[in-house]
Length: 377
Image 1 (cartoon, rainbow, N blue to C red):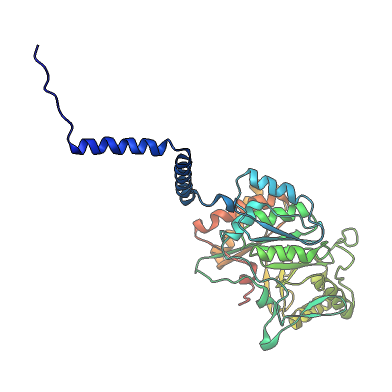
Image 2: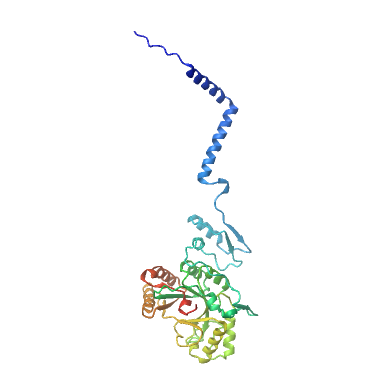
């Protein structure tokens, strides 16, 4: 048998074997091995931090500044928001001292903070120069340079040239759950009208303006079947002396601040009274407030800023009937350039109006605040 030729290792191979032996000896040293493991761990951690972020920073935090007693249900609302995967993006939540109004949904808060609701928040009330503190409360006044509360508190609006449609939702404030639903579901172009008898009225007005809604204050007026149908202790009466009408109106106006005008609550008999409407219109003009009516006073009153509704939307609480009433508002806008509808704070009405409002721009109309129809610019 032939023998394989032997290969003698050269100088380079010898140096490699010597290096391997030295490396093995080095690794076998426990101190050196521990140091190497530590270096490897730190290098891996640096890579992970660069990708995932600093774990010491924790999750994004929301700091809640709670002054006084927090509203009922705030903890469950936050828990529900986390379970739904809602990002709480505001830096701080200020919770009211009183248990009403209840906290709004964290999902809507996140959307508002992210600027998803078109138009953003309106400035908090009261605004400088258009109010005065009295013994009754804060009353609206015409400010320096002729600035009226009607202009100061109206939602900004720029006409697009399309037919304008506006919706007012009235009767808000007395039912906290329904009022909260209105704030959470309606776009900011919808005007909200609050009852003067609302507990914590200013809190509700503040929340409405924070979500971009302009506000009206409802004024109860004498209906045809009074006193069987009584809208409250400060109802404006058809046969009252003008001084009594103004006194009652000022009590109503002093319940809160931040509204651009008033909306009648009932009042079929009152609006037929020349004395009553004369006193009302004069008081509104002197204070720079708008008068929007539900359609019963389209030819009455001489307030500077006026608008009348074309359609009550929910005299029949059936979805198809409300949808048909909304179509009538659209028809008025097509024929006259603008249409105004009024709904009451019923959950069904809120759902139908919210659904309709989400489609109206796509049908060639412009959704407008009610102040735009009263020419408050």
